[in-house]
Image (cartoon, rainbow, N blue to C red; front, side, top):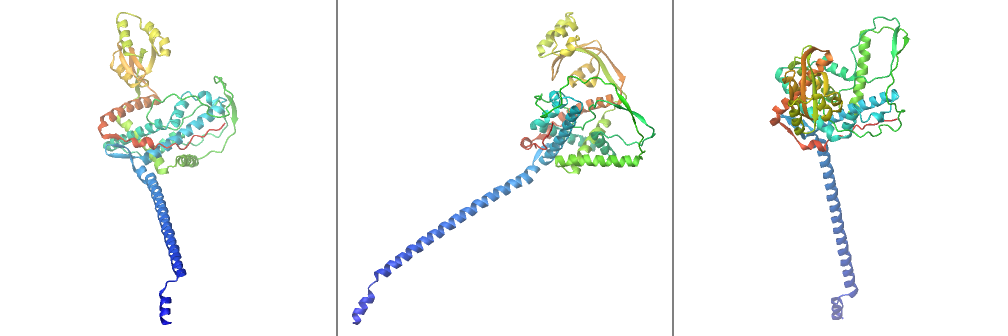
Length: 443
């Protein structure tokens, strides 16, 4: 009996062996599933981590790296992408204001703004607002010039006061210094068709802009008019108003100034400090121009005529014909591509020297009356010029300001050529030109 028990105990139970194998299979499957889940979770975690890293990197690049990248360097001073973008947005806000006000003025005058889209100044404004590369390039040039101006002003010990900056702001807004009413008696006031008033300063650098296609500005416009009919002012008595003190007028003007500037800064998404820095740069530009150039009370005016052609060979042939005794007027009428002066025999009449492009002006300034000059190349083509007379004439404040701006423009161009080795422009600016604030026009 004992032996049989040992034999029974020594034999393996088939059902137990089967249960053990099943348990092993279940355990093996559970291990595999657990391992698979761990791998899935690990892979998901790695993927999420990579996505987060990419997003963080993008945010860091967008908010830290790109704004601090250098768009241009001038004499060791860097112009960052952040400064560049803020200035572009400010310029777009200014252009939007100018375009909106001009279109509103045309509508108020009963004119169709769409008919003026291809004419200056609207064409130039639209060209810039619709061409980020053009606007960005212009603004980068302005920032480079501002840096050159600041360097020169520091070398000369020039500074601008808060009054100088406020004057630039008032000129930008078209505000005149407040004066109290002297006489409360009724006065006659003329009611006239609105005309364009001083508009905000856009860029101190004049640029040639491509012609804009005259696309509709507004969906619904006032009836078109081919010309503004002459009108006789009608005078209506204005009842007397209470005399305001200078302090009250200054307070009202100050509130208006702050309101407009706040709207402009909000639209451009720049702070007041950056906005005032823009006007400080304008004031410093004006101060340096006055320090560099003593224009006086007179300007150079010339009496000249010219023939404009497309190729130098044509200009050379004209000089030969003139030397052989051909009529200047006849040659101008037959050959000049400047249709306006060409019909008049090339006559330009008495003109301030600064009204001509620089190569033309410099050629005429260096010549003696009676001389035939050329060929002179400008952006318009090749000129053959005949100088009739040249003299200094008394000028208005506006004319002397224009002459000073012309001379200062030439100084800036020359200075930039002199400093060319220390000016570097980086391509990164072209990929970071803001397209806001957008221009919104309604009928």
